[in-house]
Amino acid sequence: MKNDISHDLFTRAQQLMPGGVNSPVRAFKSVGGEPFFAARAEGAYLIDVDGNRYVDYIGSWGPMIAGHAHPQVLDAVAKVLRDGLSFGVPNALEVTMAETITRLVPSCEMVRMVNSGTEATLSAIRLARGATGRNKIVKFEGCYHGHGDSFLVKAGSGMLTLGVPTSPGVPKALADLTLTLPYNDFEAATNLFDEAGAEIAGVIVEPIVGNANCILPRDGYLEHLRALCTQHGALLIFDEVMTGFRVALGGAQARYSITPDLSTFGKIIGGGMPVCAYGGRRDLMQQIAPSGPIYQAGTLSGNPVAMAAGLATLALIQAPGFHASLEKRTHELCDGLEAAAREAGVAVTTTRSCAMFGLYFTDQRVETYAQAVACDTAAFNRFFHGILRRGVYFAPSAFEAGFLSSAHGDIEIGHTLEAAREAFRETRA
Ligand SMILES: *Cc1c(COP(=O)(O)O)cnc(C)c1O
Image 1 (cartoon, rainbow, N blue to C red):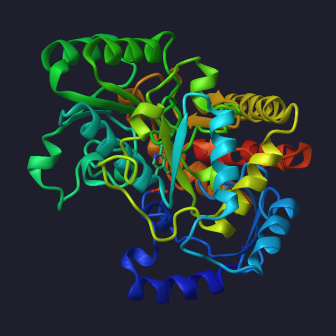
Image 2 (cartoon, rainbow, N blue to C red; image 1 turned 180 degrees about the vertical axis):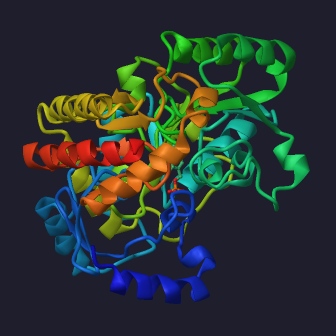
C-alpha cells in the first residue's frame, strides 16, 4: 500500500500542528504508524491522497450515517450555498431544525443549536447548575463529553487512548466539582446519592458508552439513574452526541424508554457539518438567555449551510426501515467478526446497538469500563494494522466504537469479513 503523499503531509503537519493533527485520536499514536490523509469519500469508502480505498467504519466519528457525500445532502448544501454562508440573524432552517429535533425526541421541548459537542455538554451542565443552584456534576468513568474542563476527569475517547486520566490545565477547584462513578454499577450510584445527593446539580451520561469502545447499559441501569435523579432533585442529562439518531431514530432515550431532563446532540444532526444542540424540558430551556438569565451564545450557531446538511441527513434517516436495516447489517458484521476470530483462535467479543458496535479482544462479555480497559490492546493494534493494509479502516484506538452507515452493503461487509479472517490470523501469529 503506497503512502508517500500521506507520509510527506504528516511530516510537514507535525512541524505545524501538535501531533500533526487537529484532534488527538487521528494521530494513530496508540496503534502506532502514521495516519493517512483523506482526499475524498463516497458512500462507505474513504479514499486517501495516495489513491488507497478503505471501507470506513468511523464515518467521521459518527455523522455519516447515510454514507459519505450522499447526493441528497450535497444537493441540499449546494442549494443554500449561493444564498450566502452566514447571516448573523435568524434563518428559516433553524426553525425547521428545531421542529425536527423536538418531533423526533419528545423529551426535548425546546432546543438551542451550537457548533460542537463540547459546547453542547458544557452548556447543558451550566444550565443544570443554574437551574438547581447546585455545583456538583456526576459523570462516569470512560464517558467522554468533549473537552470542557469539568469533563476531563477519568474521560474516555482520546484521554483513554493516550492514557491520561485528567488533563493538566484543569483547576483542581473545578475538577473537585466533578464526581465520577463506575458505569453500570447500581450500588455505587445509590451510595453517591445517599452521601451527596443534595449537592448534585446533574448526572451526565452516555446512555450507551461509545467512548470506551461500546458498553451497553445493564437492564434497569438507566432507569436507576432516572429514579435517583428524580428522588434527589438532580437533572438527568443524556449525552446523545453519538447515540442520538443512531441507535434509534429517537436515540438511546427512545430505545430504552427513558425521559432525561436535558439531552445533547451532535454528529448526525450536522450530517458532517459542525452542528450540535442541547435541549430538554421547556421550563429548563427557558432559563437560557435571552428568555432567562443563564448565558450561552454563538456567532455561527444555526448556520444555514450547516443546518441544510443536517436536515438533509435527518430526512434520509426517517425513511421507513432505515434503522432496522442498519441493525441487521451490524449483526451480520459483528457475528462475522466473532466467527472469523474464533476460526483464527483469537479471543474477541462484540457489543452492538443498531448502527454502532464495539470490538473487544477478550473472551468476556464486556459490561464495565474496568473490563474494557483490561482487553488486549496489543492484539487490537496488530489487528487494526492488518485489516487497514487490506483496505478496511476501523478506529485507530481500542477504545472507540465502530459505526455503520446505510451505504455499507453486502460487498463492503463481505470484503471486511474476508480481510478480518486474514488479519485475525496475523494477529494470533
Ligand atoms: C464526540 C462526542 C462529544 C464531543 O463532541 P465534539 O463535537 O467533538 O466536541 C461529546 N459527547 C459524546 C458522547 C461524543 O461522542
